[in-house]
Length: 209
Image (cartoon, rainbow, N blue to C red; front, side, top):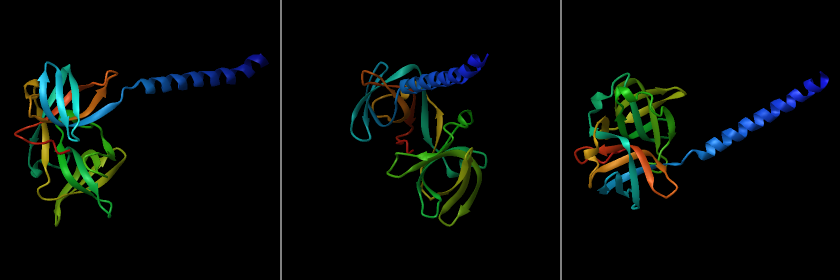
């Protein structure tokens, strides 16, 4: 019996090590994702040739069940208490976020990527996906308080800030000249990229987020 008791910690430690190794392997096997902003230059079946914002030529293969969403212009008045929004912003010295674009999620996407994080729209920009707690007119624009699961942010939306929303689209919108943003294309071993969602600017809009 004493030998069994002494061996239990070793067994437990070995089990923890095995779990840790398996978790590390699983994490390492997660394919990297890439955010793509650019213009579709050519379409060959499911393969899109995209000129990225940075000027690179990218090959993006869309999945058979790709979800296509239009990015359509909307009004600031559509941002209401309870709306779930994404705010692309620049941090201000007083701790507020100065919006450079706002996108309104449809109700079916409430909770998508909730939280506050660094973003790559511009150097030092941020992204906050959160629920509008209150919105009031201010001297510098609309003042919005947004709350997410780990905190809240005060956002100032200056006049003329692009306000857009996602609307249902279809594959016919994936055509040369379309301005797109793909939030998470998967990088494949052969260097191509794969996307299961593409967001397309409507009526000449470049997705501003």
